[in-house]
Image 1 (cartoon, rainbow, N blue to C red):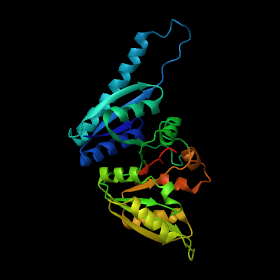
Image 2 (tube, helix red, strand yellow):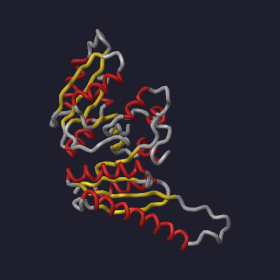
Image 3 (cartoon, helix red, strand yellow):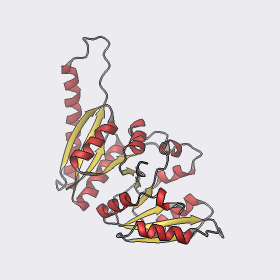
Image 4 (tube, one colour):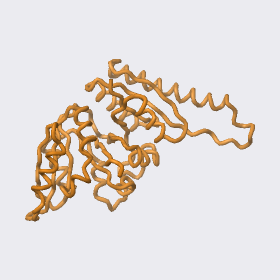
Length: 275
């Protein structure tokens, strides 16, 4: 059985993401690992922080996780197995260990803040997307669950052999059983002499999965993506983080790609293979 790892900070948007995760797991015969990373309290003296206090904190977090588990089962039924995990500090290495021990396929997280000024789990989420080395599904607050049938991948079609993690993308598409729509946005009358060669390379890389190629002429790339997603009634958007400061760049007000994170459908980041 596949495993989806769902970190939570018990916020409203985290609850929304866990609800989405359970519904997705139900359609894909997967189980959920619901987890929370907490920080150990700072002791004023060497004697103040005792094992009893630490165990009490851990027990409280575990109780809240189990309460959320009960809420999810009460709402969506108990078809999806849910286990609860508490960890202290260092979210990223703990999730990496869960990937290895639970045969995990996805991390599913939520967002907070209309302008992405604050991201769910703060810097931990930035570290997660940049460093986890595995696909991460980001669930916007307005996203409504529906089975994933079409996934849009906006690609500039430049050096696809080095910039498209095809094998990871194929594994995810096989997990969600979806069709891939490769979208290339071009300015009107923009020449592309190398396009055919790049398309042939991409075709070989994506062999074995259903996909189609679409070229749209738009002056505004973000508007073109949004229009295409709406016209195709797509269920998810793929983004390939190519830089380690990927999300930090996205949340800058001047960065138009931040508009994608106001989407009403989930976004999945699939990292490139390490060089």
